[in-house]
Length: 162
Image (cartoon, rainbow, N blue to C red; front, side, top):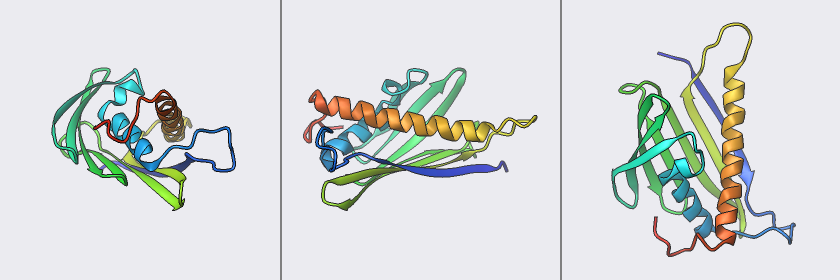
């Protein structure tokens, strides 16, 4: 069994002290996060993704990254959480993520990203896992920026579906 890399980080979505920043509703933020889960290739052009069977609360996505093809099971807890699982028992790697909307006060939205995946073993002192963690953090920051842009362009609405 391989070693697992586990980490999490949080991004403040609505800074209510910054009047110049568009305040997102929980519903619009949720729509953006679901859009990212369904179409990760729109947020990361290196990926090629297609959707498999599913419902409003769960679906399968197939991700191709270079020559690697992975099956990702996605579970949605509406307005709260998105979980993904690439099962390493049946695939080339194991990876899990949980994306959770947190609202400690009305309108004060944060998104917590938790990751658990196969660690990368590299000889020679280079810490590939630290690089990987920073890459995930940057992709998540970029995703929140893109969701904010989509919201400001009215591309995300409460009734836009998934």
